[in-house]
Each structure stands twice: as C-alpha cells, then as structure tokens.
Length: 112
Length: 112
Image 1 (cartoon, rainbow over the protein chains, first blue to last red):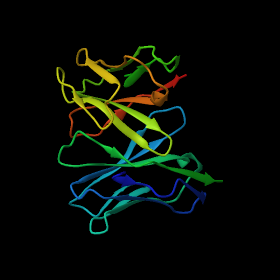
Image 2: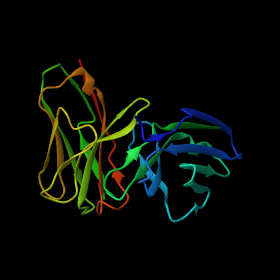
Image 3: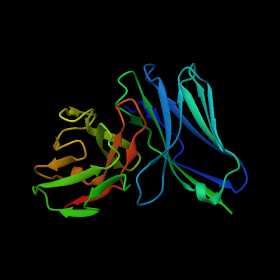
C-alpha cells in the first residue's frame, strides 16, 4: 500500500504556462515533504521542501503548497520552461527523519 | 567535488550470480542510503547508514546486504541475484539523517 501517491503519471504543459503537480499521502505521521526532479540517466536532485508547520514555501519559479487536512501537496511551476521537462517525485518523512517515502513520479513535458 | 559517485553504471548478471555496487561521497556526509527505482513505484529504500559504523534496514531489504566501509563509502551486495532485482539502484548521502539527500547517477542492473 503506497503511502505517497502521485496519481498523474504524466503532464503536458505549454511553455510559459503554469505546471501543477499533485501528491497525496496517507500517513498522518509525515511532517516534512520534499520534491525532487529527475532527468533521464541522472540521479534525482532536490528541488524544494516544506515542513508541516507551513502551508506554502516559495523558491523562485517553484512553490509548494501543503494542505494537511486533505493530506495533499502540490508543486506549482510558473512560468514553465522546456528545461523543466523531467520526472518529478514527491517524498515525505516522519519523525524518524532518515527514511524518505517516495511517490511514483510524474513526467512533466513542457512544450515550446 | 564529485558529489556522490556510483560504480558500475550498468551491469548484466545471470540468476544466482553475486555482485557489489559501490558508492562513494566526498561531501563529508554522515548518512548514506541505497534505493531502488522501479517503474511506477518511485524510489524505495533498501538500507541506510545514519552514521559511520551503523546500518539499518529500509523498506525492501530482502536479498541485499550493505557495508559502511568508512565515512565515504557505502556498498550494496547482492549475494544471489534474482530477476526481481532488475532495477535502477541509487545511492544517496546527507549531512545528517534529518537533512536533504543528494543522489548519485544510478546503476542500472539487469538480472537474466
């Protein structure tokens, strides 16, 4: 039973528009959430994170929103660029800290 | 700074053969991890080492062993490979177990 789910395996967006990637979790003990970005033949790279004491965190074009009551988080990319085309993984950790639980990933394609 | 390096990049094994995947980091990180990535499953933690001298099981440890050789190196051993172990294996490290993880480029393993 997957504790972190990304229900959209793929998303296609036009350059300049907003990309919204979604993630749902079931474990109420999760208190720290991260997004990783992965290009083909490379390892995942950290993008942005959010603690459960916040509901929003921004870093440039990237914003992560957390809705604890719905156990849902989303990553917004504005404006989307072709270089953003990659697989995006959300991940969560609980008070154990050292174990990340990953979602299955969403492939984002940004068309020029 | 090479970051996290993994060898080999690609390996083909026959069922029952053994091999060791190597991982090294040059960031003086205390914690190291081994994950496997399978289609639609995201990354799943196999084993981790919170600090030099300690190792612990993750979500999917069966069929694997690990060695934290020193602070820099963390190896993953398959004693008797099975086709179900066909996957992409990622090593990661972090300054401590509560901090962001940095990933290597991965090892693609095919077990026939």
